[in-house]
Every structure is written in C-alpha cells, then in structure tokens.
Length: 263
Ligand code: ADP
Ligand code: MG
Image (cartoon, rainbow, N blue to C red; front, side, top):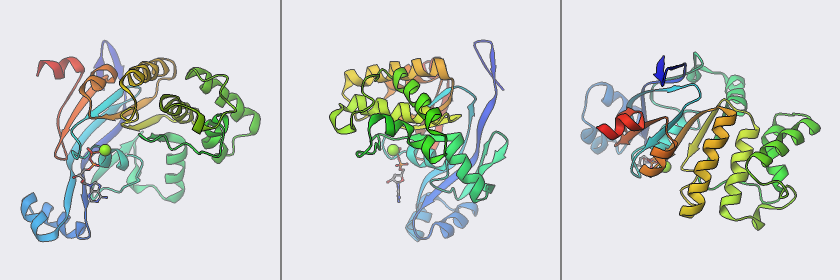
C-alpha cells in the first residue's frame, strides 16, 4: 500500500530482484553472478552483458510510474520483461498476485492481449489500414464483434482529437497525429496496464508538449496503470506520479517528483 495525497493505492505490479543478462553465455554469467563474481569479471569471462541487475520495484494501481535514465541504462530491457517480450534470468514479476513467469502459453497470450499494451516510439501503425482500422486492430484480434469494436474505436479516436480522420491512412498524418492514433489504439484495447517506451521522444518539442497533456487528460478519464519510459527529465516531472531513476541497470532512486526534487 502506498499513500498518495490521502489516497491509498494498491500494488499492481511487483518486480522482485529482477536481472536480465544479454549474450550467448548468459546462463554461465548468471551462475557467476549468483556466486558473487564482479560484473567486470563476468563480462570478461563470458562476454555477457548484465542489462538489468537486481531491480525491485512496485507499480501501484492507476499511477503513472516514469522510469528515467540515460540511453543504455536498461530501461527498455526492464519494460520488455513486463510483458515477457524478454524473460529475465533471475527474479519475479507479480501482476495482480500472479507470477507471470509461471504463466503457460494460453495465460501469457491472454495477459499480453488483454491486460497489457505496449506503445513504442515508432508508432507501429499498419500503413494499409485506415485510422479507424488501426485503432480497431487489437479488438479485431480479440474477436470483439464489429459494431462493438467500431463503437469503442470511434470513442477513442474522439478522445485523442482525431474525429473526422477515421478513414484516412497513416501516411497522410503528421508524426503527432500518428502517435495519437497509437495512443487511441492502445487505450482501445482497454488494457489495465500500459507500457510506454519513449513514445513521444521522436516528436517535435511543441507536439511532444501537447501529447503529454493529452496523455494526462486520457489518464484522468481512463485511469490505467502506466509505466512510462523517458530519458527526458522534464517529461518525467510532468507525467510521473512517481519517478524511478535508473542507472547502469539498477534503480538508483524512486519517489514522487517532490521527493526526487528534494534529493
Ligand atoms: P535503454 O532503453 O535505457 O537505452 P536498453 O535496455 O535498451 O537501455 O539497453 C541496456 C543495455 O543492454 C545497453 O548497454 C544495450 O547496449 C544492451 N542491450 C540492449 N539490447 C541488447 C541485445 N539484444 N543484446 C545485447 N545487448 C543489448
Ligand atoms: Mg530504450
């Protein structure tokens, strides 16, 4: 439990002692790590790279947790483990009480399709589909019926300010508009958890500012649990209910923007 301005927030995700190692000899590296070898020795002997090391972190229900750090600090690696695009070498990931590392194929598919949604920097829109069809995509995969998915998609398109653009193709949209479609698509799936990896980093500053405001507005209405990655400190302070600072694969500090500012 975590108190935020008098509100008690529930734990949504608990990350416990998570380690992710890249390289062909990652298992050997993992054994060495367990035996207390230094990272330098591990890297010399195995060529493996420890991208995330012993990270423990909690994400509260309906908060925006921003993970901030320089390029190469392990942010994307950490985020990818949260929907198991990447399996960690060590540690646990508990979501709503389940260790997702123990999910079977079917559970994992449901988890990926229904509970989480990932938003990347390059929007990943499908160029041969209209705006409407892009936003409907995840619902189609889930076999939501046509009328229902149209209704949800139109509502989301309206929420991100793109009404009137439903029948256009992504190529005629600006970068900011494309990212709006990406947001609408993510929210249309109605996931509990949004995983956002520097979604606004490629946008012009003015557009980026607008998108941040828009995300906050969407969040006020839709109340998701959001893990948002950025390397931009301003963005972290604008969006984060809490901010975790990551360096060299570890979380150095975590707290509300106010707490972070005072340290
Ligand atoms: P960030 O998102 O903070 O920029 P990443 O999680 O992408 O950092 O990368 C963390 C570290 O892991 C970096 O040193 C990066 O070079 C390395 N890395 C990332 N992906 C791979 C990979 N597939 N294979 C080997 N090393 C990787
Ligand atoms: Mg990254």
